[in-house]
Image (cartoon, rainbow, N blue to C red; front, side, top):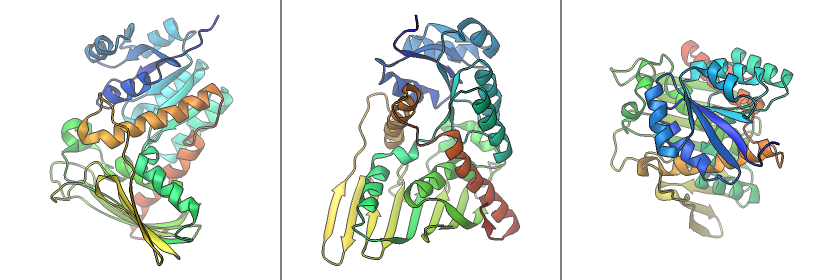
Length: 345
């Protein structure tokens, strides 16, 4: 008889797995991690010892052959280029799939993943956690209250000089960097707050001479709702204090504005009054203080994905939903390359 807990395996034991795993363990009464896969078995064993995971593999087929009948889902935390490979293998075995954002390298491959998972009658979910940050959820609630009226303009910002390449050295070698990596988050937040996008225009720069891809990107996107949203991203912004890893924004509406500034502080301004509040994330002992808000949102995102797998509600970031964000990422690169406005079909 199937156990009450959902049993799952983590595919990939790199930097983010060290935080994704303890985030899952916050729900230890509902899920159980029974296996780890990594190309380097030594790294898998390190995490196995740390989190008491009973099975380690460096061969994913062996993992599925031996434990596939027990598994309910897998969580793919590998480099983006391998997401589709592992997702297809799991779906073939009838296992539900969770993959890190973006779910793959291009929209065409994403369509193949989505279609195949539907054919196999398995869920394809995407771990897109930035929309689950406490301040972003608070801003959404304020928007939905209509206290500032219909929004018409936004500036969404994530700028830093934090050494992200030290924790994630593979980022240095990506031909497409900040839009694919960080833009996936920023564009998803944009969709979460304002709905789908009509068209966009993007410009990029490569400032750091030791990396291959772009580390600065500025995107002006117009949402179908009419909101004009300027999304600025940079891994090359030297400032003190450095706002990493906080997302900041300023939204203007017909009746007022919302400012999300440093230290999770939110200010709502109308002609009648100014309200100030904080939306602090839950603090977890296992979180890296530099990434505290991000790591807290991993737990919130996992809760939503788990509820989907348990059948209590649909996940916000399914494969179908993330495909819409992927189209924006692709359009931004086209715009930057052609220096033209790109319309989203």
